[in-house]
Length: 118
Length: 118
Image (cartoon, rainbow over all chains, first blue to last red; front, side):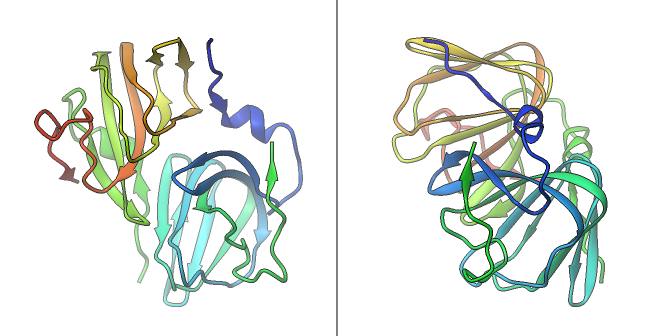
């Protein structure tokens, strides 16, 4: 048996939609997800979990109520739980996200993207 | 306030030792770590946690008792908890690791590298 690794660029090549994360694996009760970001997302917070962002390509700004974090390729940032934030990608950016299984990406189950495994 | 992102390449540039992970952040009770791998590590397993590997540069083979996983840049693999494995880097590889805080990297507290925050 030779298990296959998960190639993030290959996974990202299989879809085009923005802010529709795809789940590519699991780790300790979390979903490992890739997402294409472009434009502003929404202001939200997660009261029960930190929010992990690793930029794979492109640039992402994470707006906070008192500043912003500017991320490029190879930059990682963790938004602490309970902290309001709004991701904005001025050009398309590709991102690795890690969130507990079932976390609504918008912070609100009513508006959250479905979890899609690829 | 403009919080700084964590640049993984910059963090990796600050040390040279192999198989001595540096902690660069925290996420939901886990340490986010970068490590430089070269040569074989040791056979071990973690009975209480999955083991997350994302190759940032170079190549890493993860030997399993019944095969191996070959990883290049942008490849991710999660060794399920309880599964014996032995990472091997034929040339130096740079890796993002995620493990619960306090997990011994060798699977054994007696031989584990200290957790060093940078």
